[in-house]
Image 1: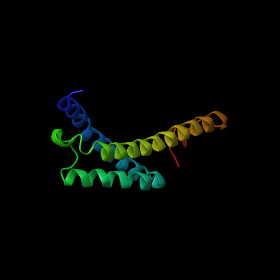
Image 2: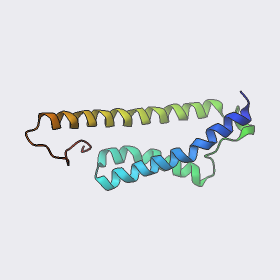
Image 3: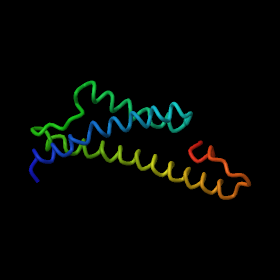
Image 4: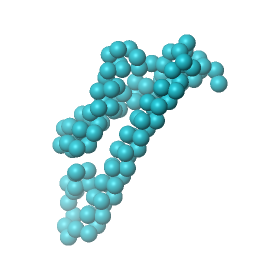
Length: 114
């Protein structure tokens, strides 16, 4: 694969990832999910640090030099995202089960409460 094409494809998604992570963290803060918010803050701060230092984009000339370090960081980020996904799916399932077994139907149920 051509390094120019690969870095262009990856760089296209980086700012979207940062924006979605920041939006998720702000949403968790405003909805009062403190534990999930505290779990999301380190990754959001890391993204902000990369953006402020202008190190968030992958450089074509250094793509192969930093490949192992970038791969490790992206695997750690993938692990964090998988933990968030697992927690959210579990909470949605628990909320649906509590709706099914409750006596009254309340739209403001505890699907997303933690």
